[in-house]
Image (cartoon, rainbow, N blue to C red; front, side):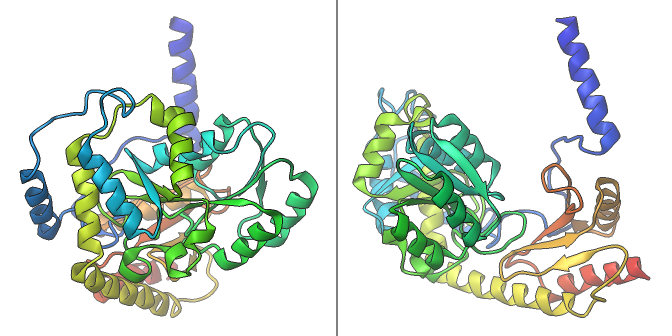
Length: 383
């Protein structure tokens, strides 16, 4: 075992040397430009009240004590799945413990041997991992470049064809051109697997995400809504047809061989949906959209060219301040934390070399004064 321990040590030393060493860091007491809690739901008393009321109607049970195929299934999770399916305009829904697990479950089982998967090069790691576990051939296409996608479909497309994309991408914060992708999918009889992780709760009418907002939800094979971001809790739900649900139940190892989510987990998902789909959510979405607009306006007042950074403003809560170099971006992030802002550097290889950044997440809890102060600090760094 000594050789294994020595290998661990050498690899970790290498990471420390090249600035890619990772360790868990909790959020501090500074101004939050870090978390994915876009609507401020996770710590809200409104969520607490709904959860407590929902839990009071259920008998206490710490866990489900089995997979859903071996005693872990129950009426509450089935009722919640029906509720979520109806909410997201689907025929059926399947709850999972996390967005990672949901993506793994779909992508490792739905594409089969002889099929071909085409995925955006900036797709999340969990989507790529799920694709690797399938027996299908897979090819990446240039980010949001549907011309490149079509060229690769023409060249490599065999068997059943799948397009794998995100509604909003987690690093660049840009939208997929979903309507154009749907047209392309119809041309090639392809199934779209859409991760709505970064649109759930904050985007569209009642926070139902991009596909429902653009009225193409019935054109998508599988939609994955993640609850650890905008909804402020945990878990995920896959929405689609009854056929899709049954196929996943019968073929997906991440579903078959894992313990069913406990009641309190499912309660959080249902309670959060009730909250963000109502008046509370409407109000928080309006504030968030104003903050997104404010960020764009304030960032546009900075010099377009400087030796330190480049701001990539978007129409989503995810904003990027590009600061090339792992060491440099880490220094700037550290300075911002000293000044009272909760931010973290995103370093290569998480992003491409030269695209290292401070990922700024906006929330309904942020103020225009906080956004302005953030950029005032950047002005001093330029000077």
